[in-house]
Length: 327
Image (cartoon, rainbow, N blue to C red; front, side, top):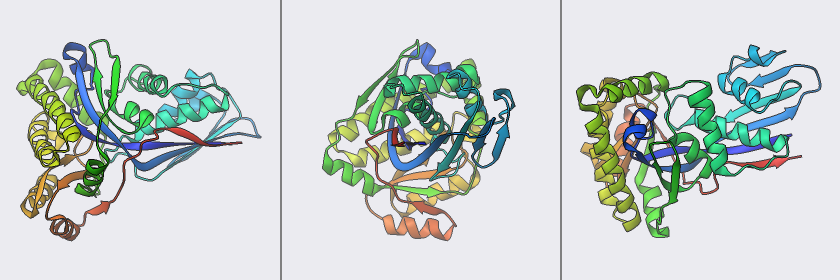
């Protein structure tokens, strides 16, 4: 039995510039932090013939093509697994909530299956293979952020060149700044699940055609990402919070699906209570609302609790995806 553990991620800047529609023409830059909320993947030999896959549903099938879970099906094909295997996934956070669960699933599954084969792969290689499965084999309108952040862990900036090559850099964040950052970021679950591919597909189409000035907005988001790196490394977290607000104002103008009346109401409420800035994590439209506060944390917490939002506390993860049990 093999168990892999893979962190979820928070997008801290530059989100959306990791999509091919943008980076293949202009190059991308995103900033992500892995968090201690995890996807666990269990891989075990199956005694009986067939393949068993258990997630929110359970499938027992006799062929790869019969597997409904697209990531499992294509990953097993990619690694040439054919029969007598069981795969179980357990997640700390629901899917479709903006924390990169599909990327974490794919990276964790690859690591567990490679361990089953007794093959060692570097985190960068696993991340790129996970991107390949999503973007090439499954033709999803996704980017490179989730897989790289989940695989490498830590707080990093990632530059993507026009050919899609990703260059990560671990940010030089002091222990004091890290403590303040973990204390200042507040995460609230909106209770809204959404299909990220629908939102990302719309964003891709707008950027490709530069509808409503989408390309210029993505340029601005990338510039804010670079400024966020400087703010984090210099310890200027007030500026980091302000940049989150600038980023959100630009990002919500890229596509109408990015936000809802409810999200706008909660964000305005948090800002009134003292939040410097924030955004919906991931593609948008629901999931987790991330806020940064230096003052007024209790006021923000109380106001959003009355609205029915649930807070999720966390710390950053610096280990990335790993196999934690192999026997």
